[in-house]
Length: 210
Image 1 (cartoon, rainbow, N blue to C red):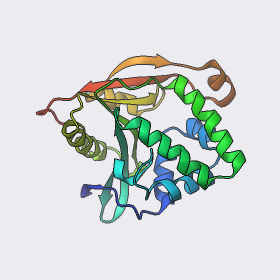
Image 2 (image 1 turned 90 degrees about the vertical axis):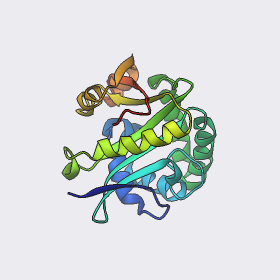
Image 3 (image 1 turned 180 degrees about the vertical axis):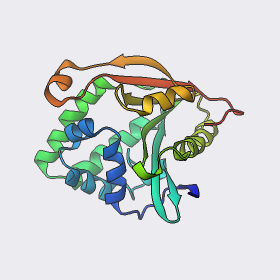
């Protein structure tokens, strides 16, 4: 496998991106978006935009002979609020009224489940590797690219949120992430199967590597 990491272009088919995004936390994404069709329409609007939470400008892709094998989407803490507001506007335009209302209500729960990133951090919103590309260093390469961007923006830490039962937790621990906060919302756990999540952080050093 020959993998290269590139800055994500704006013209990627939303289906492939949606599949990778959904795989990171199916229960959570099912609660937020309701269906894969909704996520497809959000990506059609947001991915090619200049701002947004799932905008290509904040993403890296891992490619293997033209096939997408991984994805990382991240934001600095400073740019996060403006990108979030832009995403809400684009999502409202892309969705039916009832779908947009559901999404906004779901995001209110995310404010409780996911702690706000500390000032000076680069927040990894999504990190996904295709099942057939796992175990060969794709995530390392994506994180290395994110680290370069984070250092260039003056960030001091990487951070991310991950389900406690996700196999990726062991990987994050292995490369130096530590759990700073644990969160669990009984309503989400009992009703939607969205259980304990970890807010994990790792300091950035110019000489370190992912």
